[in-house]
Amino acid sequence: MKWHDMKDAACPVARAMGVIGDRWTLLILRECFLGERRFDGFQKRLGITRHLLAERLKRLEAMGLLARKPYQDRPLRHEYRLTDSGKAFAPVMLSMQDWARKHLPSEDMPPISFVLRDGDAEVDPVLTDRQTGQELNHRTVLLRPRKASQP
Amino acid sequence: MKWHDMKDAACPVARAMGVIGDRWTLLILRECFLGERRFDGFQKRLGITRHLLAERLKRLEAMGLLARKPYQDRPLRHEYRLTDSGKAFAPVMLSMQDWARKHLPSEDMPPISFVLRDGDAEVDPVLTDRQTGQELNHRTVLLRPRKASQP
DNA sequence: CATATAGAGTTCTAAATTAGAACTCATTAT
DNA sequence: ATAATGAGTTCTAATTTAGAACTCTATATG
Image (cartoon, rainbow over all chains, first blue to last red; front, side, top):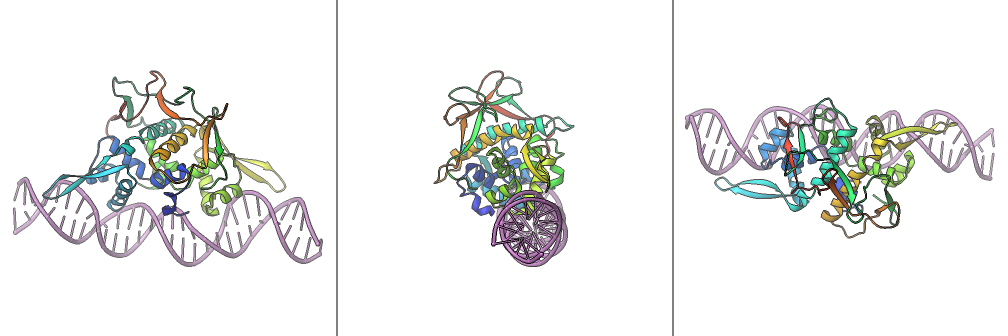
């Protein structure tokens, strides 16, 4: 399977990997959530090469997670902002950070914390089912192929 | 930043990308959740090159998501099983598939469904806070750098 | 016995991606 | 007149990935 093919995969997990399946894209999104909007800002904060950054931003825009908007003329300059679809990615990043904190331990405190907007409390995320309220994990949920399974 | 450096990053999101930051790893994990355990099984189902598959399995083992266990001698053969840490990744994959289904639409039905173990109902995942029960999304949660922010 | 199959890799070459540094272009600041 | 800012683009070298072939052990088949 090539990069290009993934965005048309029938499996949503595969399509998701067509967007964030590389070392940088999620880190760019993280910076977006932290408020960064500009090319040089991303570049300096992440240390990504300018070439790749340009590429990734283009892809995130093409996939609808970021929107490129002019913020001045003379000279014309653009900034990148999270779209609704990009903002909707927040729970994924949050559960990923939660998993990594618990299962890929590190010496250091995480440099970013996720806190409830009202109050200082760091969040303790649990995935639940909207209808039943039941906690969703490998014990309560079953993955089931619908017909045949393909990438 | 190179591949190698990511596993020691202070930021959990970066460490997570050191594990799943490529096109294949998450698809391998998906197959694990679907019950696959063997090298040739992964290879045939995914169409990944054997070379890369061997590499990725080695990394997943090194990172503690999979464990390699002999399932026969004569000749000695091993299979790969999800560890607790690997199983704990389920909510991340689930919220990712939910996001992708809603925001990277496709012609096809998803070939995999996530259903509650008791009953047929497909799950409707929401991330909530364990203490307050509040829904966690970009409106209710704030990302906050703890000190200085670095990859 | 000779050949074939299964399972889990390894090895090899070519193609694609990424790293890293330098260059462009427009406009404003010194 | 020169430097700085911001957003890219271009170039070469290093790394990764694709794809196919090969290895090795053991069992099955004719």
